[in-house]
Image (cartoon, rainbow, N blue to C red; front, top):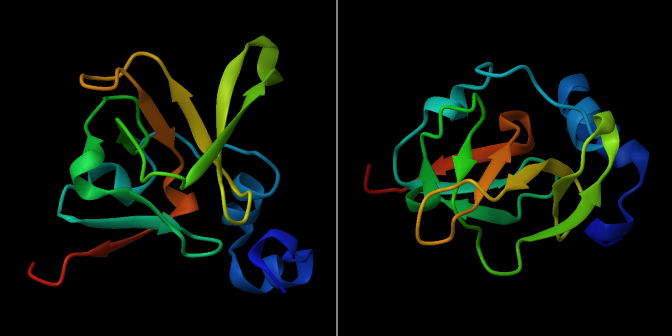
Length: 132
């Protein structure tokens, strides 16, 4: 079975109820609730669902938004689509491998990209670099 066809039983057995709410039901964790919001070590942020690498630590910055923020992604790691929920138009970010909801991307980030990938910490797994 490929990650793209992962059934709900496998999701249920591998994710917490909060991860399921965010990653499968397009929820949002409370701002400031994720320890990964404050993680600034070198390492890799991967999808909590399929473990596919999404972001490197040097792509992360403190945006003050309350969620882990990145100014770019690993090439091909995410897909986006327009989200019309909550009476607004936003760009939703999904893992390109398993289609899990990760968060949203906004056009108010720092140079060089001008993007702010605002990502739910429960959607991520962090692995620090071995040298640290």
